[in-house]
Structure formats: structure tokens, C-alpha cells
Amino acid sequence: MPSISQKGSAMPESPIRKLVPFAEDAKKRGAEVIHLNIGQPDIKTPEVALEAVRKNTIDVLAYSRTEGSDTYREKLARYYAGNDIQVSVADIIVTTGGSEALSFVMGSIADSGDEIIIPEPFYANYNGFATGSGVKVVPVVSRIETNFALPPIESFETLVTPKTKAILICNPGNPTGYLYSKEEIRKLAALAKKHDLFLIADEVYREFTYDGATHYSVLQEEGLEEHAIIVDSVSKRYSMCGARIGCLVSKNKNVIRTAMKFAQARLSPPTYAQIAAEAALETPQSYFDDVKEEYVARRNLLVDELKKIDGVQVATPKGAFYCIAELPISDADDFAQWLLEDFRVNNETVMIAPAAGFYATPGLGKNQIRIAYVLDKERLKWAVHILKEALNSYIG
Image (tube, rainbow, N blue to C red; front, top):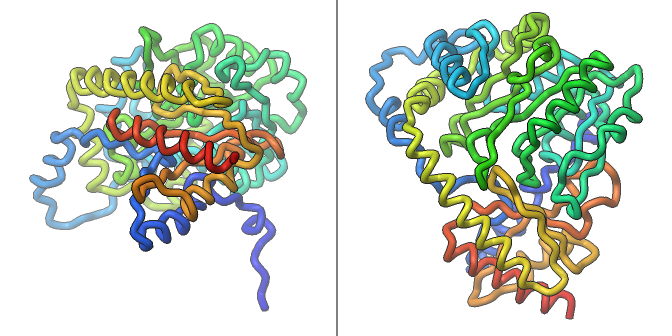
């Protein structure tokens, strides 16, 4: 029998999606599954984006330009300028989601065996993108006790080797919800310049910052123009996960020129989705104000309710819409599967994301879960109640 590749064998499963068969089986058996496992916002997509697709009069659904349409990139450049990020149309490549942007970045800056330093826990698919590119992830541990703040910069520097190509952060973070401060970004920027590394920032949750905090982009930092790369997406910003439109942004011309070759290989990003994404840029600030207010209320409720459960420790997110909770158990993977297979309250159960898959260091995060607070407050409170009852039963 022909064998598959070592790369394919090494490709990790998604900790978010690997439990889907158990959830589907629970539903077939009549249970209602409350999804706390995936960052699919329940916030409505801006009507202006949906209308742009409904009213379009395209006769031939043709390829778009490889780098994305001129009009969309022009409006993107204005959007970034409104966020104090000064870039030109030539600095932007539109991609099929932020995922493709990350793949292009890794393919453009690193060869097989090269290393990228990432604070963990991190977005689980970074492991997949790295494996697909033959890149080694070198983790730096951040801890729940410090709310997943940036580890000491010395922790990064001791890991720099001749193979190190970049530092990658998610800001605000998935799965932690941590928002890096300007001072933390500047420490990373200084390290990147000192060792001639790229500083890649996944900034897809830029709009979602709480408690008066503001987002500071790597492309706002002066002197970092040749080092900074932004990965971005419309998925969470406009609740348009299914559009699959993202972008790669950098002032480093070699990065853009190289990424374009990867982009040409996949021809072009989807046309209708670009039309929707372009229209979404007209979304008024009031939309984000309302969304932020809702997420803050959900965050506060979630954290307060989790803290009422004996033995649970939770980090308070500063952005995005995720939090990490540490449970009084030894194996969150087993617990998450048991929830779907065997536990019900009023014939309902919850689906959570075990956090071990968000770490690269073996053994870390085994007693942690990620919760996405993308449910309305009443439903969220009920879900935490089910989780509490489940823990009592599971531990007992």
C-alpha cells in the first residue's frame, strides 16, 4: 500500500474541530450541544456587506487580480490609516483568509528546518502552518498566573539561534484574549532588530480591546518597517468567517514580492467575498462600539461565573473573545469527550476546546480549556452551570 508523507503524518489535528464527530453523534442521539469550542461570532454580519453581494450585477464571475482588487486594497489602506498604520496599496496582498496569509508568510521567510519563536498557548493552526512549511515552532511559555502576559524578553533571547527567522504573536491573543501593551511590542521590536528577525503579528482581533485599552500594531513602531509583517482577516471583525478574506501587510518589498509568487500559484482570492469585504469597510463605528459592549458584558459574566466553581482558575481577557480556564482535572481531552458522550443536564451538554492543542510543549495545558464567549449572556450562564455540574460528576 502506498504510504503518506511524514509531513502529513506530523500534521496536527485541530483541537477545536477534532471533537466534532462526538458532538454530531450527541445531536443524533437527541441532545442539544452548546458550542463554547469555536470562535464563530453570533453577532450579525453588517448588512452593508450582505447587500453588496445581493445587489451585484456580475455577468461573469471572473478571476480577480492575484493581489486582490485595486479598489479593495485602496480602501484597506485607508482603513489602516484610520488605525494609525501608514501603508500603501503596494504593501497589501489580499488572501483567502488569514490562514492563507500565514502560510504565505511562513513560505516566504523560512526554509525547512528554520525556527519561529511563538509565545504559548497560541492559535492551534500555527502548528499546522509550521508543519506544512517544514518550520520548527520554538515555544516560549506564558502562564495563567500572569494572565498570559508577555514572558520576560530574556526568555525569547535565549532561544534565538542561527535558524531563527521570526517571532510570531497574536494580538489580541487567541486563545488567551491577552492584549500586548505598547511597551511589550517595543521590547519585541528591539529584539527583532537586534537579531535581524521578522516580527509577525496576527492582528485579526484588533477592534476587540476592552477596559479602555488600545491596540498597538507592529506597523506603528518606527524603524521596524523591514521587520514587521501583519496578518489580518475580516472573519471576526465583521462576523464574516465564511467569506475567507484576509490579507498580508508589510513594507518589506522582498516579503511582498516573494509572497506574490505563492499568491500567483493559487491564482486569486474569491471575487464575491472581496465585494462583501470591501463593502464591510463602510461599517460605522457604532457597530464596533455595540459589539465591544456586548463582549465585555459576556466576558465579565463568564469570568465571574467560572470563578464561583471550586478549583477553577481563569485568566481575564483584555481583548478578542476567548478565555483560558484551568480545571481541577488531569485530562481536558478526556473530559471534553466525556461531556459529549455521557453527560447531560436537561438533555443539554457543552462542547469545549481542550487547551493542550494550543501549546507546542508536550504536557502543557492538559488541565486547561479554551472557551469562546460567542453566546448571548443567558445562554452563556447556563453553559457554565452545565460545566459546573459536569465537573462535580466527573470528579466524583
